[in-house]
Length: 520
Image 1 (cartoon, one colour):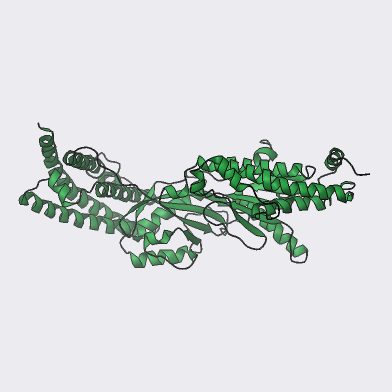
Image 2 (cartoon, rainbow, N blue to C red; image 1 turned 180 degrees about the vertical axis):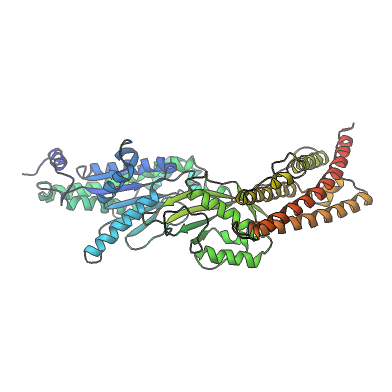
C-alpha cells in the first residue's frame, strides 16, 4: 500500500544527513549587499524542498550559521555537504565583502579532489545567478542571467510576474536547475520513500507545475522588487578592472602590486589610459610598461593612485582608500574606487576597482555673476591649498617631513588636489575666453596680460608635475631619493611663488568685477 505524503515526509526527516540518503545540499554564497536577493533565492529553494519531502538542505549564513560559531569551520562543513554552490553575482558597487571568494575557492577544491579520487568527474556544480557582467564559466559551472530589463522595471510588477510564468514542458535554465536539485534529492530518498514509484511520478509532475507557475514567478517578483530599489549599474558611467593578485610567497603584507597580477578590464576601462587591448587580460607589469611608454610625464601619478587603492583594499592595517583620482588621456578626471575584495581559498586575492568619471558642475543664475563667483570660489580654494603658509601641503610642511613614505604620500595628496581644482575650473569653463572676459577684463590689455599669466602658470605647473613624477617614481630606499625630495621642495617653492602672484592679481580684479556686476 502506498504511503500518504505526510507519512513519507516524516520518514524522510528521520534519516540522518550523512550517507547515501543524505539530502541534496545547496550553499548560497553572497555578499552582504545582496542579502535581499539571497533571501529571495533561499525562500524559492525552501519551496522547492517542500515538494520533495524537505530533502533539500539549504545553507545560508544568516540562517544556517550561528553567530557564536567559528564561521569558517561551519562554512567548510556546509560546503562539504553541498552538491550545488549558488553564487550571487549582481555587480553592485559593494562597500563590503563577505566570504564569497573563499567559499568559491573551497568548493572548487572539493570538485578537484573528487575528480582525482574518481574517474575525472564530479557531481558537484557551481551556479552563478548574475546581473550585468557575465561571470567566469567553465566545466561544472553554469551562469544564469537574472537581470530585470529596464523596460520591465518601468512597467507594473504584475506584468513582469505574469511574463515569468513558464511552460511546464519548456523550462528555462533556472527552472532546469531547480529540477536538477530536486532530482538529486529524489535519487537519495531512503526506503520506503524511494519504493512507491506511482506516488513519486505524481509528485514529480506536480513539482514541475509548481516550479513553472509558482516558484519561479514568485522569485522573479522578489527580484523585481529588489532591482527596483537599486541604482542600476549604467546610471553612472563607470569602468571596471579586476585585479587578481597571486598568492604571496610568505605571510609578509603586500606593499606593492606584483608584476604577475592579472588585470581583467570591463566596459572599455583601458581606454581611459590610452592602452586599449583586444585581449581579455594583461599583467600589471605589462600595464606599467605601456603606461610609462605612452605618458612619461603622468604615468607615475596614475600608477601610484591605482596601487594605493588596491593595496589599501587588501591591507589589514589601513582603511580602504577610495579617494584617489587620476586624469585620462582625454583630460577627464576619474575617481578610483575599490568596491570589492575577495580572499580565495588558494591564497589569491581579487580586487574590483572602478574608475568613475566626476560629474560636471552647472552654473546657476546670471551668467556673468555666476562665472565670477565660480572663479573666486576656485581661486580661494587654490590659495588655501597651494599659497597660504598654514596649508598642510605648504613648502614648510614638506621641509619638516623626514619620513620618505609620508613625503610621497603628501606629494600624491598635492597632485590630487591640483587635479581636482583644475577639473572644477574646467567644468565651469573658466579657461575659456568668454569666462576670462567676465572675471578678468574684456579689453585687449587685460586679455594680453591673462595670456601672459596663463603661460607662466602652465610652465610652473609642468615643472611641478615633472618633479612629482620623479619623486613618486623613485624607490624609497634608493640613494637618489633625498635628491629627488630636494628638487621637489625647490620646484614646489617656485610653483608657490608664481601661482601666488597670479592668484592675487586675477582674484583682486575678479572681486572688482563682481562688485560691478552687483551694482544697480
